[in-house]
Length: 271
Image (cartoon, rainbow, N blue to C red; front, side, top):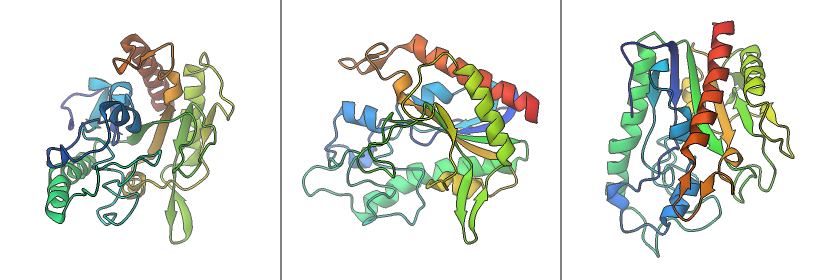
């Protein structure tokens, strides 16, 4: 996890909540998921794709798997919530914990104190500095909606932007919709050489986001956009060695540069 840097290229905060693969110490030995499942059930390679170093003001990420501490869920989303901070099953419906084992209240309290709270405290502190002009929440997504998602078995775009959150009045925007369209246009230029999908190649979602992070920090005065990139761009026979759980580093670096070029071009034209 990184915090605000003294010198930065652009006043952007990047939040990567699901890029980790590690099981928390409190839960080690009780998990039913293997290393490959941990790798694939995360936002695979999100930390590598969206960490832009000193080119942005700050980056907040994690090494912990979303199955065991989902940082994009509120503190109130605890057991027996099926899709809360701590998961009972994976996105494909397989158990996260072996047998009848499930963390007790003490273990849950420990992981919240060690991982959830510091992550969100770091975000708040950076925002409070007043130096941030744009927040990007970054994810990677499966090419097709998994069984227990909100879009099961539906093909997904290679890039999706979200900027709508639910409210008592229906829905509100976390930025001017023109900004989301501007980032989409910039991404289209950067990703023009990538293969098409059955779905729309790139899209701005009109549906309210289900994520906690966008809802919590997107209601601030700082424009915020959730950016999701498809895993199909690198988890394939060309770039992924499943035996070693290794993705081609040159491919990841190339994609990261494409995304950064899109972000930089978008920011220079709109801020």
